[in-house]
Length: 71
Image (cartoon, helix red, strand yellow):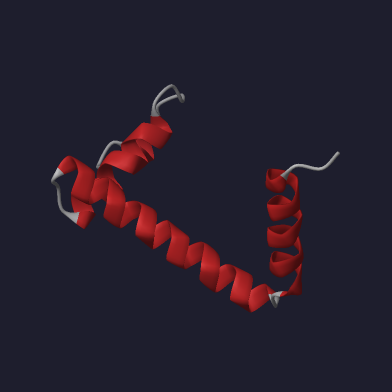
């Protein structure tokens, strides 16, 4: 028996596969920008500060590199 969620997931998959690669890239960039806007608004910070924090979080736990010390 199929659930509504399964049907929705398959429909979204079909729609995504019907898009051109360029359209998929545009959608990914738009979603990224929306996420950044949401993160900045939620934390009450500027977009540049949001970018900086996200970059810093991505580096957490990694082996430090001298080239990244400037940021």
